[in-house]
Image (tube, rainbow, N blue to C red; front, side, top):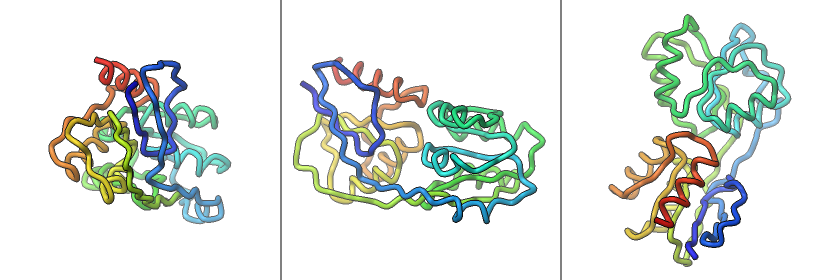
Length: 218
């Protein structure tokens, strides 16, 4: 049986494959801010919103927002559809979303972010003359711990989880590394060296699990 460690509370679809044992040990902790810490910072004149994580979706769940959403990730978009939000664009990665956003006439956005969210997308928009107002709606805290058990594969869902894990652990050369997408893959390579890193073309739980199964059992 192959052993897989997921370094977050993000759960993969239930799997009956007896060849896999999936353990969950979160290396980050997330605090969703109450509405009272979000609403006062929302400019009334802006009706275009950027959402790149499920945490941001959870934070705005009960906040009335009239306008269009620009979204990274199909799972994130699915959650927003569940809130009856109007979604203009969905992209698997921020760089793809950037291209689409620059094709629009929109010149001002609200970016729902966490305290450790990367500024790549908003910075790129600003360089192109687009105003981006960051509204922090959740806080991520690192929760590093020492892992003594040997795993065949590690799964990282964010650069923060990578940083937290590597603060107390190394990634053995014979351990497979799976991540949610390009940004987290870059974090692994920047912090752990030029390791092989696997990520799916589509940013969905199902695609990630399929990739893990196909690769680890190859």
